[in-house]
Image 1 (cartoon, rainbow, N blue to C red):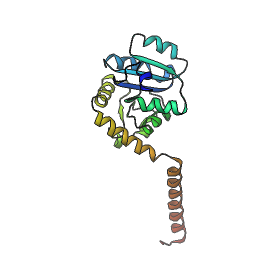
Image 2 (cartoon, helix red, strand yellow):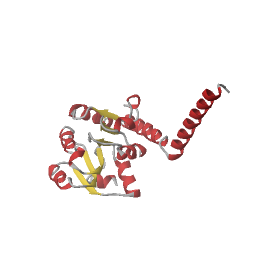
Image 3 (cartoon, one colour):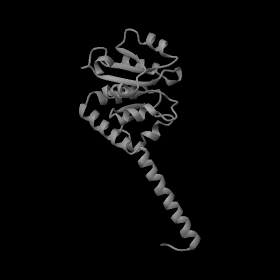
Amino acid sequence: MRIKLSGGEPEKPLIIHVGRFGREKNLDFLKRVMEKLPGVRIAFVGDGPYRAELEKMFTGMPAVFTGMFQGEELSQAYASGDVFAMPSESETLGQVVLESMASGVPVVAARAGGIPDIIPKDKEGKTSFLFTPGDLDECVRKIEQLLSSKDLRESVGRAAREEMENCDWRTASKTIRNEHYSTATLYWQKKTGRTG
């Protein structure tokens, strides 16, 4: 898969972006990122109304557009990237950020929308990286930091995957159950005046 996504140059650093290609996703920002990262390749996995314009914009650049992937093919695409880039400033959840982290691929994303809920301040630099929306230099610096250190990429990717292991239905259900139990216990104690 990496051979396909890298345009036949799997030894080169590879940024990946997965998602719906719409103008509101700020994907033209990635062109400016790529202009500052010679020798780096980028793969766009997905489709959408902005695809033709994006392909035209990236003509002559080391960029590959694959179209939609699903299932195992999508998992392989995520796992093939060195860094996942998310420039969108309007994400409500950022499902692709969750998927990338679950695949063990570090994310560099705009600190906007729901993304800081996935990568809170105390996890920044540990499970992934955020940049100030629109700050090209900060984004490039964080991508370069990850691309220049395999050890850092692997440690951040590992931490991201571990963080996502806490985001399954079983863990969420257990958390909700425990919160409900604690709330019910406190209510009972207040109502009855008992502490045990």
